[in-house]
Length: 336
Image 1 (cartoon, rainbow, N blue to C red):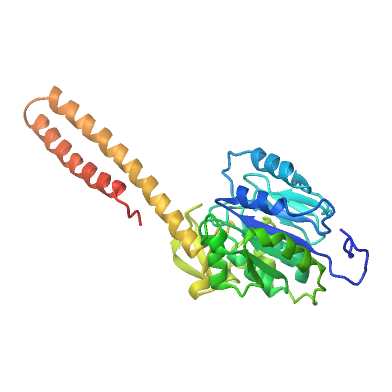
Image 2 (image 1 turned 120 degrees about the vertical axis):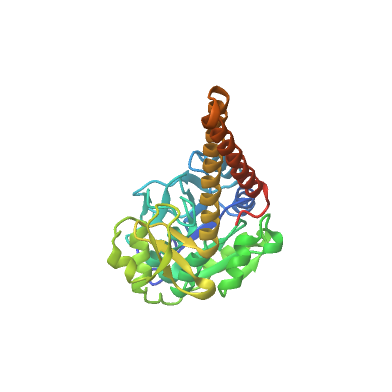
């Protein structure tokens, strides 16, 4: 992409719009996309959380049907074109390189997702500086908040869907709680707002910090070493749910995030959710193994005699105690 935007004025800051959404995202993207004309002068990149085995075809078809924009799955090497909407493919991160071309990568999951929102937002801020407009729509948890902070730090514009207007208000509300956003509007007003935002002159881009550059390189798997992660924060006494490696704490307080040296990254909420999932998975495995053990001991008790049979019967009863305890935990509402 050249150093001028679609107006051809060389002194204007090149612009890009990046959008992140999760639960309820298809409805939100359809409503927003329908408000934008085919000659929209800025490229748009969208990350929608989807399962790794999902094709994303339904999302693309719906967007293409309702939007006048040219909608396509992003591919590595794509140049960013005005009037185009690039959708991140499932099970891959979509990012922007410093030459302002798209890169699709199999980097480690962030906040339990791939594609994740934060890698796209960070890379867009590095590549476009103050020319970035970041948008967070409906969704669970807090992916995108850290990325929005980077956009704000680099001088870009931050927009969130009004949580009262969102099918799932958690993602936009978390951004509001942690970032001084520029606009908070319902979807019905977002299209006209975007035309206003991209029409305003942008200030100079702010210097990108070393830590932001490092995290961006880690997400593209350019970096994956202990010294790089050591620069971002301090080790903490718990492990990465994704790979079992050591975690480093990045930032602190309400802004705390966690990274391992292979690239997995979590907000505090995402880490707690991932830990809970691992605990539940382990407990289901333990339940199966205790049930198999009880069945084997019951068989031995029936087939043997004397002390061997009695010992097997007692151990089977003890296994049933463990089974009942694990089932009670698994069936409770609190998995934490």
